[in-house]
Length: 186
Image (cartoon, rainbow, N blue to C red; front, side, top):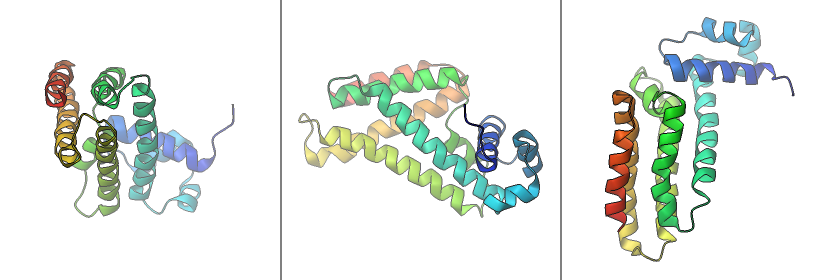
């Protein structure tokens, strides 16, 4: 197994700390200690904690979207893939003990002037939205003019299920949202 470089160790340490402890609760010194990296080494790659958070969110985006896409792929129709995305939420959230969405968590914990982080959250949510729209557009059941509206309704169900599952520490919001999605798509 290849040993991680300084930059990768910083991102990995920060990713775990930001996700499980929170952005504001995680200081640079804690990241450096977890990564076993000096401050000078960190500044070769990152100018600030915000820049580290951007790298965390970019990596999380590719990982999360890749895992979602792979999870739903075995389904035959795009409609089934959209519905299966709720099953992905269940598997993912159960695995992290209903810790919730990294983007939702960091946005609620974010100082006002951290626009780079906010921008990454918007990129992720917009790409997730487009993923849903594209699946529905390719399904002959849906009229082109209805796809965005229906897709946005599904997105709201998914996002709401994530946050309510985090609050409740339970899967019933995912189950309820999945049932609502099935009604919308039928």
